[in-house]
Image (tube, rainbow, N blue to C red; front, side, top):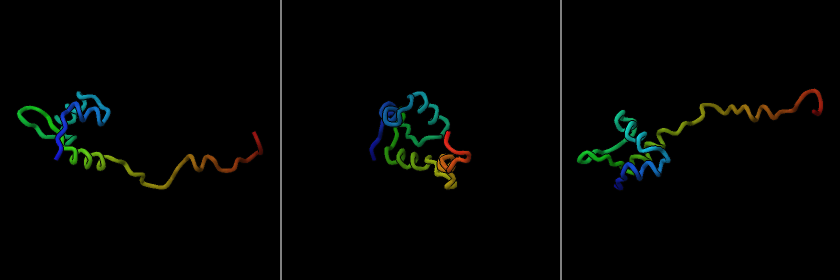
Length: 75
């Protein structure tokens, strides 16, 4: 278990410290409170990041279809 301070985690995630405080108050990010100080377990944060990753629901890609052959000749 490696515990990170709020400042260390904000640098890793590239977000503001204030945002981390808000997320922890709302229970949106795993954290530990030790004597009033927030700490974050790196393993928990890695799992949380994986859980937040969005996976496409289909293979539809509008950019592939937009490159299809054009009708009407060259432009």
